[in-house]
Amino acid sequence: MTGAKELLREKDHVFLDFDGPVCDVFARFPAREVADRLKRLVEPDLPAEVRASADPFDVLRFAASCGPNAAYVVERQLGRLEGEAVAQVSPAPGVVEVLREWSAQGFTVTIVSNNSVDAVRSFLGLHELAEDVRRISARTTSDPARLKPHPALLDAAVKALGTSPRQCVMVGDSAADVLAARAAGVASVALATTPAKRRTLAALDPDALVVALADLRLAP
Ligand SMILES: [Mg+2]
Image (cartoon, rainbow, N blue to C red; front, side, top):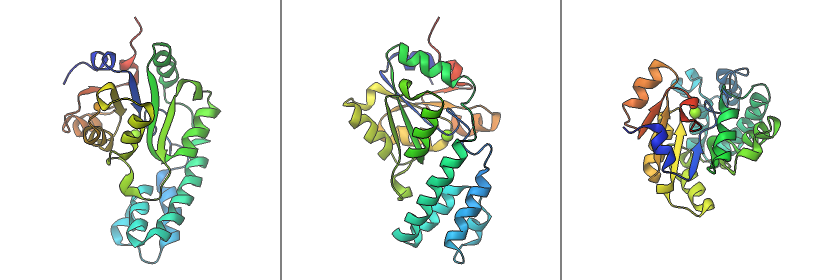
């Protein structure tokens, strides 16, 4: 693993995960409640492990396994609930300063997120962060197979920027971010804010690991 700041300095484009680094999406409207609301759309076929899950994306993946119509209905409702969820939360500590600084230093920032593009856009607008973000590469499809850890969202961001994966770095707080970055040929910085995340993410051998987003500030 190299130093995170050194790695960042070598790049032009930062791909930043949304849920975690930018805000805690389900801090006020708990993920379990969102998952339970989605489960009602696909009952009574739910397998026990999906019924027990608190992760809305587990329900989306199950719906997709039932067919495109079920996936469409669940994804639409997930998008609505994500919109409600992000309206209730504030930017994560330090993220406003980091985004300002990166854009002042000439990096372009793309939000790369499994959350709905509308929810991400509305949060950025609400908190006046849109100016510091060049693009949003987030969920627009009801096909969960195209979400991280699949590299599609990163590939799309690279293409839209007209750059190469070597000029980009993905910063994210989950295994899916590190794996998607590797699959896209993009360097990864794991953001591990808890000891448990540190263990999980370090085991995936990201290119660098930080314990806070502020560790990626380059200003003297
Ligand atoms: Mg995340």
